[in-house]
Length: 511
Ligand code: CS2
Image 1 (cartoon, rainbow, N blue to C red):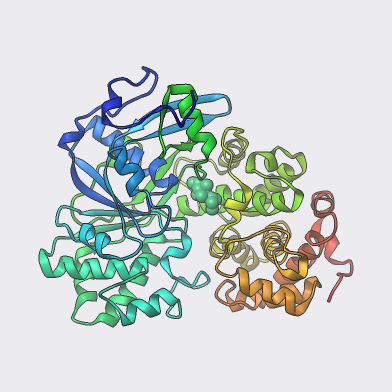
Image 2 (image 1 turned 180 degrees about the vertical axis):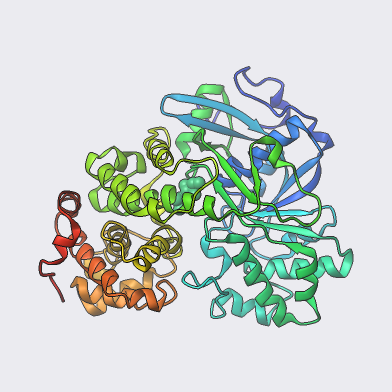
């Protein structure tokens, strides 16, 4: 069936869907908006919205979701046409499982002005606000977690608090409106892969609220909860091919389809204000401390993805599953995780770290999840602290080798410098630090020592005490040298074959 000619998904089609497509098992007309979600991308539709759909099917409780997009893609029209309905495909190698999710009752686009977002966030019935706004959406300094007061959107919002642009600015304005109109408590639940995400969110919100004065920061401290959470499911950006798959297999058109793997996990800190959707009844876990889960997930699963994406691009692989199918890259990433990352983890209740590594690598090998290495490589400057630098710091503190973990850090550098004019603009990149790093490459030349020194000096990414560490510098320079050579895969092969410390004794090419 041609997707262009197929009938569009929407309420009238629900009764006529093929039997193998699961449908919302509750009365959608009885839903009431209770949760707002900022950032209705593929991940949200594959994760929190699905958990909510599960909750509605088993316990109902009227929790309707209102989506808010303050950045592209603008989905209000697409999802609006479908009355919020969309298909969530689970793809596991050859298996395809379709389910129509019904938990989203409305989506508002709020890109041009914060008005529509503020209106929703200030409703008294919204007592849970979840968000997936990407790492950089928090406008924090990655190396310290503090709000970035030089961030253009924060600068703007401090001068124009009534018309905010940043996520923290919008949240503070919404909380101000709630305080002034009804004063109901609310939970702001970050679902992004930043370390201690609830704490970072609370800090950036508080920093702005304090500058507003009027006791707003105190009101927030008493009435708003910022739990941390670990979220997990691999759900790459939707492609035209995914839309065609739905049309071909199930006979209808869905412009908002999302594709994910079967695995999913959600661990939420038990710290709430106001009413809470009982996601713990449908597979989520409420815990006192998310930290061990968060470290495990960001250092192992995300650390592997980040490693494979940079080494993968350098080695000529398009997707994660292709990179991890390469025996050399698989060996490297498994050794890195097992030898260097695992010893940095705290005990995680109910999970064997070694088994988690194998499970993660098996997830990444899923050939039906076409996660582009360039997509994961996006915004690496906002990701490497939690995925690579924090375990490196832990190991350095104990005098342990970081030779393997340094390779993806250098991989991230190589990826960005190769996008510069100096290196012939090998590919297009998207990262808030891309221009700055391209300018470094254009200025200092192609020598790995000069490049690494200048990039390590960016203190928003590298904490100065870490950047000053001689072991880190030596390892990163050696790895950058290898990865910028004509044959980066040969370098990875050497790293796997020979103890790294021996490599470091050999002279390094320099600027
Ligand atoms: C990925 C994540 O793009 C990325 O940064 O590493 O989106 C990853 O797929 C999810 O965190 C998996 O839960």
